[in-house]
Amino acid sequence: MSAEKVDEIREALKAVIDPELGQNVVDLGLIYEIEVIDDCVVRISMTTTTRGCPATGYLKQAVQDVAWAVPGVEFADVELTYDPPWSPSFIAPEIAGLLGGR
Amino acid sequence: MPGASLSRWTLTYFACALACLVAAEALMVMGFGYPGAAIEAPETLILVHLVAIGWLSLLLCGALFQFVPVLVARPLLGEELPPVALAFVLLGLGVLLSGFAAMAGIIVVPLEVMPLGGLLLVIGFGLVIVSLGRTLWAARPLAMPARFVVVGLAALAATALFGESFALILSGLVGGEAALSLLLNGVPLHALLGLGGWMSFTAMGVSYRLLAMFMLAPETERFSTSIVLIIGTLTLVLIAAATPFAMAAGGGVGGMLLAAAVTGLCALGVYGSDMLALYRQRKRRNIELNAVAAIGAFAALLAAGLLLVFLLFAGSLPAHVGALTYLFAFGWLGGLGLAKLYKIVAFLTWLECFASVLGKRQTPRVQDLVDERHAAPWFGVYYAAVGLGTLTLLVDLALAFRFFAFMQLVATLAIIRHLYRSRELLNVPADLRRGFARPHPFWPQPIARKLP
Image (cartoon, rainbow over all chains, first blue to last red; front, side):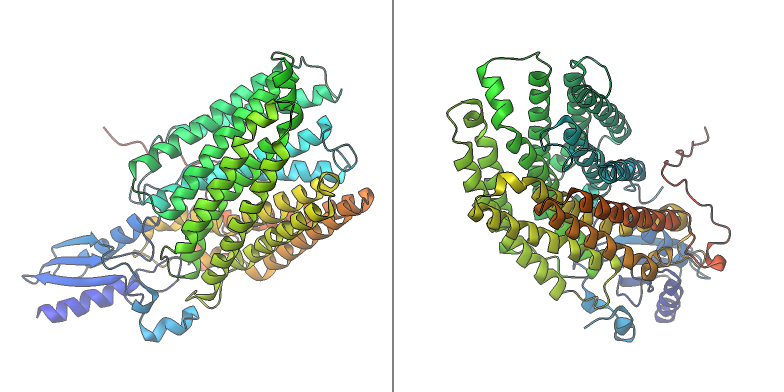
């Protein structure tokens, strides 16, 4: 049941776009971990492409809002982490070409 | 509000800086100052300070208020200082320029206004240093790019104090042999600490981080970057240490500056190879216009370095220092400034307009705010004008220089028009911008009052 909820939340988070790269935070590899407790409490661990980016607060808020809006979710907590620091190698292979990745 | 590290006054700084750039270019088109007048003429001093303080320093201050918090991943301390600093710098610049205008016989004001202008500038830049310095101090230990900014701010302080000393001497308030000797021999130190220390060193430090960020290049700290920091700082120390020689009539400044030229060129060489490595290691193959246009600035820096070496060996540096300074200020610093503005303005505008609804409704990307296809040729025109303008200065063709200055002015105005279009969301497809309020082109939004 929790695994399905994780997938549901992951799918919902694709609505959040990194404004700089123009791709969603899931495919960019910015979402490190999604944990669902008792089917209603969500803990998300995420990062940003660069530490100190002025959009960081907005991205974190957007991820929390979207996760909270998933049916059945009663609380969503988002933790920002830079361990490990994000690397372009985290980008999903399907969209790597869109960024002109090597 | 999340993302509180959005600098409220940065766009106002940029607008004032661009106004000064346009004014300076218009003066060059009209034949005001060098090369029509001597390089030490008051008319040239008006032009030089309009560019150095009005255009480049305000641009850099505005950018640093936004990017020092990014470099250290902490909010800016002393958020109330940027508008106060801006007012002091603008007022100080106006008063200083009126003093130069009085020296040129254009207007009648007592020469004592010059040290007043200098003092206002010292206070204004002092406030900038306090705000950024506190932020940097609180973030120790500092990453490499931030250390460049620290050295740059120290050079800014030295430059401003040099300037105020000159203003006191020129107005006659301070006299004596040492003062006169400083005025005669110390101007290169003032210029080098300003253009080389404050502006170039700071821009170099920030470029390491910004280019890596926007091109998805590895942000690892290279040993070579430490070399640039150490040798570059040594260069600036050598320049500052020449001050006692400048005050003593016996000379010795030339030897110190020659040593600084050697270390400075070494630092620039290593910096150039670092930038080349960043471009080569980038993960984003299709780089944006800001990174493409920055290549022109790096080329201008390389050309200025080669020109310096050539002029030193030819023994004709004093005769062509104007051409070299023009290439350095407008090609390297100005070119890099315009290139980065093209990105920063769009990015800040996106944050102001769309960040708060991220995830709630469809928003454009930052790239949707710009029109690179139509903007790119104007950067080419700008660099071509600066390059050809430098050549005309080298061969003493004053009238031809004015033509290329006009070309430069037209390119600048076209780039400003593109910046304006970004701010007004004019490049964003109508269906994506519907329902969003456009920000003021350069004035900060009022802070939302909290209900009691």
